[in-house]
Image (cartoon, rainbow, N blue to C red):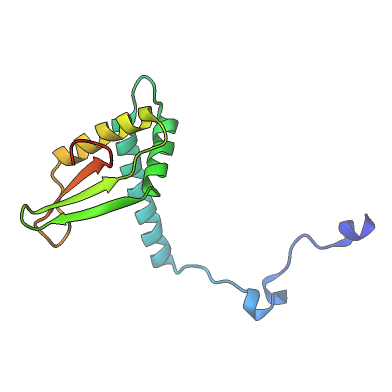
Length: 131
């Protein structure tokens, strides 16, 4: 017990071995990373607002989006019709699938084009008849 009390709580930078030393981001890089994080947070907040309804609050809609971000999807290019279909695999709950359909309807209505191409991005659920 006494050894624990005698153990220093902090290690100074100079006492760290060279391989254990870490480096801070340069101020410009940190600002860039903070800006990217802020843009991502605002985009997530905006999409959460689309998902939010009487049965899905903001926290639950954020969790649903975070699950969506790591969900597998098939990317199906259709050069003939200039459409890039993103076919997202179904969520584990039917209510989540309905919320995602609402989100995809809104995203599809905005007619987003894949950067550097004329292809319009279309989001669908894998079991949806909208494919």
